[in-house]
Length: 380
Figure 1 (cartoon, helix red, strand yellow):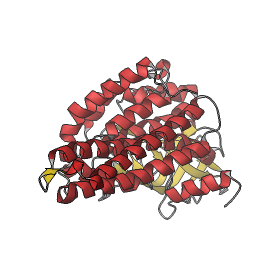
Figure 2: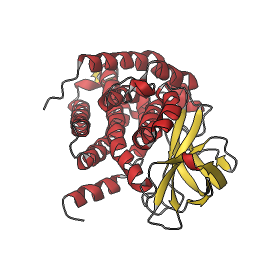
Figure 3: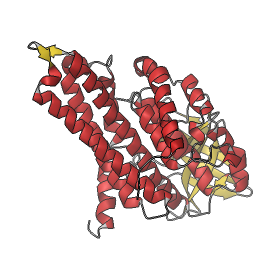
Figure 4: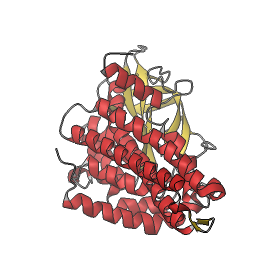
């Protein structure tokens, strides 16, 4: 088993790193302050092929692999988490359900615009009052001839309210059977489909997050995605893979904290010498670097298992659990090193501090990951 990157993967990482440092980083403070969704940067990522990395060329993709996507997410997340989650959710949650469970017709019709970054799609699983109880669905779909009529709501959905958001895939209970859950594609603009105004979030300010409402939404039968009754299992499969990508985003945050602290520790002086010369500061930075290395190795291993057709669900949960909790710790310690400056959003560490906490919540809380790991061991 080797984690050595291919020449193509190393080249991709360098290209994305250059884009992140030169195009994204100078805009990060402004995006955080205004909360404006950066359509121009998303368009540039589309032109770079980042949204199509794991998809075949016949569907507008780059013919790459999932690891390449994770590498890109890590590098962007290293300077700005909002744009990092936009890419992660755009591919892992928005496009993957179409690729994995759609018909060939659906793939050819819907996937190219997503893979080329011309459009975004959302992943509608979480519901008000549901939270981690993803199985407690109340959204329903009733068959009416050649159509389905959908009623219900979703909450905390990413990438559904932008100017290029084309559709959302959702879970809904079908045939009045709570055990039967099916997926559907709901195009933006469908009568009865209302997109909320969003949330006043602690972090991820430049990421689009909305609540959704469905009132007698009528969609054609061909908008069903995947087999009847397989919707919940299909979406859980998407989340298993997505946890690897979220781990990459968390590693980006940890490494970003290391980058900023190394620079600051060499510039800032206290009591006549750089603060990096004091063991209290140096050890904090060393611990953060260790966290980055361990977390990165965890997501690389989970990704290797997945791409080699081996069971990876437990390892994805391990990677997600450890990387996101490390990210919260790293952000807190980085803020401590920066002192009062770290408590402002003028510096990246202040923004990382804002963004870190949601990593322990999105795509399965830390508690859910512990449940999954415990169950895999036959306990809990």
